[in-house]
Length: 203
Length: 169
View 1: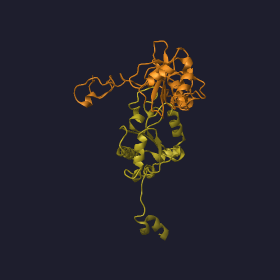
View 2: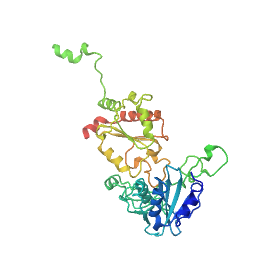
View 3: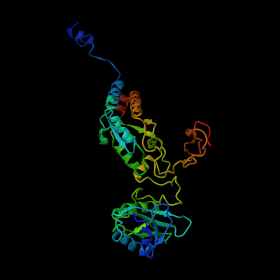
View 4: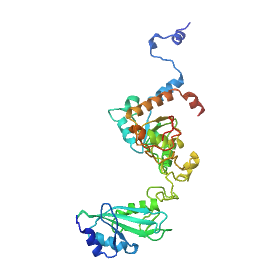
């Protein structure tokens, strides 16, 4: 670990800007120089391990989406977080880094599945968690936790069982721990709506 | 009276070797003591299901040790774990391939009701696509709870009108 890593990185890559971080060094990278930056990080600075790729949905702001990359150097044991703001709010897309790190393949598919951010140049950009015909991107802010009604992935089974994908009954949830007095069993997180319960309505 | 008539009325040689019963009872006795489960292990309940099959809890004491990974050879699907909407059609198709008569045990909170997974991705109880015979509470249930469910299923099978169903089928 190099204490001066961040200042050296900012000096050698003038297009990067520092980013607030509670743990590892973090930088912002403009989208048009992201592939150049990633190549340099891998080849010049030894960041040979791509730990995670995810996105942030800032919702009512613009740019709405940011792609977040966590990198680790297995030689210097240095972490770095690179955040790329995506200018297009309607059809967000960012260059793929599957050519640089094979690990990016599934991570980018997951980010595409959950946020609808497409990764240009990805060899196989399909959904990885939800089924192919699923119409929404569940981790976008406007998507309710309970979900929307839609068809089951298998239409035959859906017709035979007459069972669509229905929004989950949230019962006033997500689970909340409201009252912090009394016994632990009274305080354990639960849905706010307890009208289904045989006991009295809890706070 | 001829010799053969006497043998129909009473034959001391087979005394104690013949039991009279109802056909339903015989069929149900055979079925309930040789349930071949289809292990549908989808989450952590699957680990408890494995424990039930292992020596400490030993499901073979109840005649259900023959876990069949082929649905065509099994009688009872044990849905052990969280049923996601992506997995649900596969579960239903495997159930459809099982030969009649067949039963379903929903093992654990997730298979019974969706459990703690109140979200867009989780089916809120496998009974929305399968006819469940026994629900097991717990997250995950203890192996004893699954054995209890198996015994309850055996009792349920014991009340079925099997002979009539065989004729009508």
